[in-house]
Length: 227
Image 1 (cartoon, helix red, strand yellow):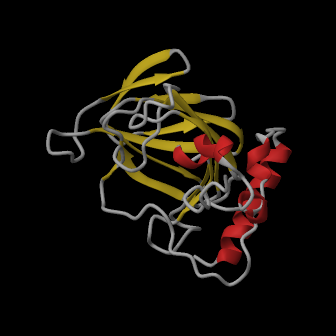
Image 2: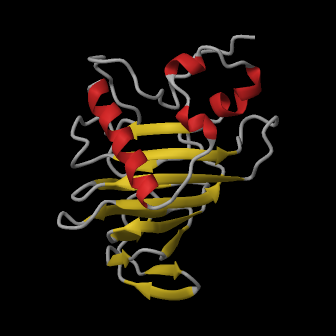
């Protein structure tokens, strides 16, 4: 991805957050120059990958297969300095965009439509060899428990949420003629390095072509502390 594309996505994301009156913590407005001066008091952000995160899943077609997200808070299952047992994210999904099929070995999460258009999910159970099972899936949606055939579309309208358990394959998308969706996630600790199982092998962070200065640093780009 070009840096100019990433900058434009982040600004678009900021506009969607403002439209939905979702206010971010101050560190999410830090510039790259600000980060050059930040000391160890901000290590929780660096160590737990808080902040801006844009992915094209290594395929170079963000508009078709991509996700813009912010990790607002997170613990760390590998570092006992950080004792939070939970995480929170906010995401932007554009019309026509798909977040591809995956599950988590450990993380349970609730996905919430915070505003905009409709978010369309499909879920499957995982088989023992981590493929898609052709078995009914138990759905827990805003206090309602029911069962659907594997791969059934589940539409989340603004305000609605869906609980996702370990070994639940899930993909989600926004319909092409819809508005962009602001998506919330409340979950157990997030560990993108070792707790994502994509059905098809995919990349995590984009390869960036630096065609203009960065507007915001991504969560894997922070410089070391300066004190």
